Amino acid sequence: MGGVMSGVGKGVAASSIARLLKDSGHKVTAFKIDPYVNVDAGTMNPTEHGEVFVLPDGTECDQDMGNYERFLDRDLSGENYMTTGSIYRDVIEEERSLKYKGKCVEVIPHIPLAIIKKINHALDVEDADIGVIEIGGTVGEYQGFIFSEAARMLRQKKRGDVALVLVSYLPLLNKDNELKTKPTQYAVRTLNSGGLQPDIILARSALSLDKKRQEKIAFNCNMEKESIIAAPDVSNIYEIPINFKKAGLDSLLLKKLGLRVKKDTFSVWEKFVKKSQKAQKEVRVGVVGKYFSSGSFVLADSYVSVIEALKHAGFHLGARVKLEWLNAADFDPTEVGKEKARKNLSVLSGYDGIIVPGGFGTRSIEGKIAAIEYVRKKKIPFLGLCYGMQLAVVEFARHVLSFSDAHTTEVNENTSHPFVDILPEQKDVVSKERYGGTMRLGVYPAVVKKGTHAYQAYRSAERFHIPFVNRREYSKKDDLVISERHRHRYEINPEYLDLLEQKGLVISGLSPSGRLAEIIELPPKVHPFFVATQFHPELTSRPLSPHPLFVSFIKKVLS
Ligand code: GLN
Image (cartoon, rainbow, N blue to C red; front, side, top):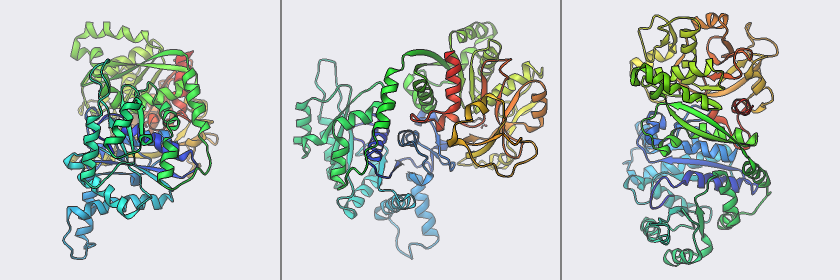
């Protein structure tokens, strides 16, 4: 649970704990509980709530699920995510089908009991030894009460098997001042009033916690001082498990849970962190997006998986990727005027590579298209993600195929050349305003064509390979079949695929039906690296196993 305030890295702390416990030889899974009434994160604006992460089964969830997958180096499922909305929905559905057998259904105890049932179910399905459960929000918030009550009940039922870690924050008013412990003391009292006592406090702060402050928290919160653990800011989040281990957090937790180290496998993580610390060569990558706020925190939160995927690929190749945000509006002639947009575009030549990430809607789209045209012509390495791929096709249709009004119907419904159009099955969904959880979501297969950038990248990335079922005419015997995660309502209009190919665009990934373009690229003799995907490769990049397309992109960026 989190105390004092949100946004202090509770998800990363929980992920680090999960990693440490996994590396003590236990089977670990992780849960995120969001206090929102939204049934899932799919309907939330990323600039408000952060990136919408997508799990293999199509669950649209909080970005912390991405942290869990990255730190645990495994896939998770929708069973591991819940919100206030989804829990209430489950309870109401059960009530409607008489599962409560005529009882009066009440917030307490029925909602917390449903939360516990869901957690136990997920643990059983996976046969997990340990579940790390992160409760979103901050201790004491009215809307979080059902979750702290669930924590209390869980503890009461499974005495000795549950440990409570409070991720708190110690403010520092100015550099010469001391870290303040009072807000943490109040957070613990609030927990106490709900019948909970933390076993461990992770003291997040700008500086490391000193002995005096550690003793003060321990004394005032009825705890042992070893249970108050320093968690100062770090520049590399992947060092956090190492810092926690040094502070003895894993042994402390195992002791509280009555468990032992079965097998210590932490050296793999340590080796990765050492390698990341050695990464020297710096490369500059620009991300062209539409930004509502220029606050770098907002941006970092909305694109967290892209940022991490770039870091993983960089570390793997011994490089530090310096990421910069480029506002698509600056390149949009309709927003800043033709002359200024053209002038602004020249900044792009200062980058070693450019990414156009996913997105929705109509704003600044001409700016993104102009940026893609620029990097295509100037042969700057380019990686397009989802909307980034759709707009790369629009750009190609306009400037190579000379259909000047080519567009996506997401922006212009009346274009005479709809190179990107709504997926047929989405028409009905949108007309009925059934927006929640209805996009093309989760994993789908793609057949990757031999002799392409994509093939080269995926060839040895076995974790993406899936058996070749239902081989059809269009695919060659030595094509690869891969699986990737999606989140979109539009697609490259299949009617134009042949024309695009005739004019030199390589469709290097296709759905097994041969209908839906999954990866496009330009041949190496035309452009050093121009690759874009309908799916989101950033979601499946892991520190210990970087995504092959990001690795290929950074390789070209470095060369
Ligand atoms: N807006 C586009 C679509 O719905 C792209 C979505 C995305 O980038 N995730 O298809």
